Length: 269
Image: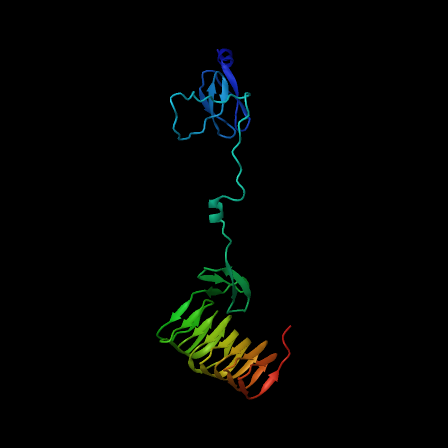
C-alpha cells in the first residue's frame, strides 16, 4: 500500500528559489517549504503564480497564458537602490549633546531629548530639565538643562547650576554654567560666576560682586567686575569695563573703555 501511494507523487521545482520537493499527483497548488512561495500546479508542473493587476480587458483579448517552468525565464522584481522609506524613518541618526557632570566634572554625551542621565564616572544623578523663570524663584537650581529668566522673573539668594543661562530679568545668585551666560538686564550679581562663555549684551548694566571665571568673554554693555578668562576678553564698541581683567588676550574695539588693571596670562594648552 505504501509503495502505491509513493508512486502517485510528483516532484516540483519552486519558481522562486529553485527548491525541489515532492507532492501528491492530484495537487493543484502548494507552498515552497524553503521560501514559502505559493506555487500553482498544472499537469504535474510548477508554474509561477500570476501577479494580480487591475486593468480593462476587451472581449477579443486571448486568455492569459501562465508561464511553465522550462519554457521561459521568469523576470525578477527590480531592485531598489538604497534603504526603504520605513527603514529610513526608523533609522534616523540619534542626536547627541555634551554634558558636564556637576558632581565630578566628567565630560560625556547623552541623547539630546533626554530628561536625566547618570554620570559614567561617579554614578551621580544628573537632571537635564530646562527651567523658565517668570516669577520670584528662591529654590536652588541644579540641572544641565537650560535656564531662562524672563523680564518678570528673578532668582535671588540661591545657587544656579545649568548649561546655558539667559538673564532678561533679575539675577542675584552664584552661577555655574557649563555653557553660555547671556545677560541683557541691569543688576548686581552676588557670589562667584563660572561659565564657558560670558556675553553681556548692549544696554545691560551689571555689577559682579564676586569673581567671574570664563573661557571667553564678550562685553558690549557696562560691567563692573573682576574677570579671569583662560581665553580672550573682547570689548565691543559700546563696552565699558571697570575692574581687573585677567586674560590670555584683550581686544578693545574703537569706542570701548577699560578702567582698572589688565593682566595677561599664559593661555592654557
